[in-house]
Length: 303
Image (tube, rainbow, N blue to C red; front, side):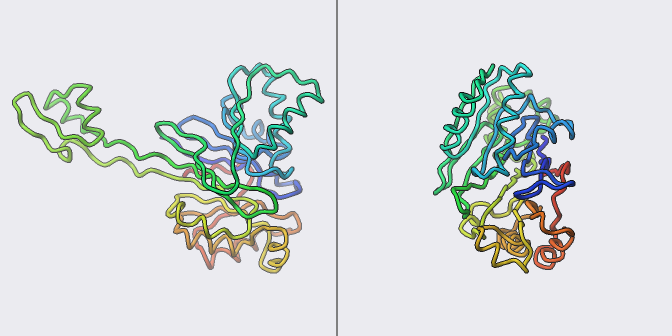
């Protein structure tokens, strides 16, 4: 089962010659989820040869322009390309009004339906769930309502051993029960323990997306041990006061959060364009949390 994140944009507030504005594309088992949609996102999707037409769910963390301005053009392109599938958008309720006004002012007649899902900003909320994955929103601390997202695989079923299926002539219905943890009783009435028939599945994986926030320690308990954490690092420690005023984080603060959360890997991004040498972000973060890397546009990370 595939589970990866492609960084489409890693700059904050202003794009640079190397970095577009915030957007991530999550691929879980060939289902595609877009997180945030800064200006230029659709260009990045084309540039990095992503399957744009298969994006059916878009999650917007908050309504600052560098996280949402690209949405209007992307939706328009979807329509011009003949999209018919429902597009699910998850965001603060105000975005629904903004989109409706935009479509009215620009006389936009979409060729596909949009289903809007409101995100609250004060408590955790399950936004999406199927048999393989759940996506949860949780509150951050920014100047306006802002949420982070957890993409968490559900516990996988046990693996049944092929040789045991043949040896005991196990039917389809029994296989499903065994994969869910049941023992098996043969036609002769012999009980075969589940552990003899199965092996443990691969561990479930999780990806956490945190942008535009002061340090938010309240989130630590429910994202402990995540496999991959993306955390904004807009500023360096020399600008800690500015980070506090603007409700952002420094690289060191992001690393401390990763250490406290016991995550396996940290990706820093959302860098202020004021800094010319991003290597300084690593210099501040790695002494605190060793397994830290910097986001780069086009980077694909396996969860």
